[in-house]
Length: 220
Image (cartoon, rainbow, N blue to C red):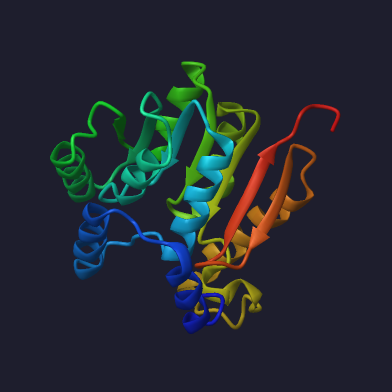
């Protein structure tokens, strides 16, 4: 949690209430120690989906399908959501949830490594109006080029967990040795997004940190 947890809980209590079935999935996932996007991230994701009204959505990192299902609640009925996951146990859980709540006609689960899946989508010339990236944090820099190619001009890229519970502020020597590689890569990713001529980016200290990036029109 980047901001004070009590303050975040209060803000969430003012207006945010997800459908009962999503609350149940969230509860079960947390009990099984499967990561689920935080309430403040849910609020922002729903807000930007309502604002952008994308014709198509790509999610990188399905887990048990909670965020895919959330996205389905805040997009039009004819919007198809492609989502990528490689962990077999999570794929199984996601499929069960999609089937249970009759969302398999709207949510297309792409099984396999995200790098390969993204290459395949680029080769197929797929285009998305909205991309939500919540996968292996150390791979964001590797994903961002194909993501750029997949996003329509003016489309939104929402990247979760970019501030790493505030650890992004630390010197690499203050971070545990096992986390230094991810720490360095995330700093590189944030520098790229905020200095690139291809993206217009703001970083929001909600949840574990969210980067909101718009694919620029050439010449902007």
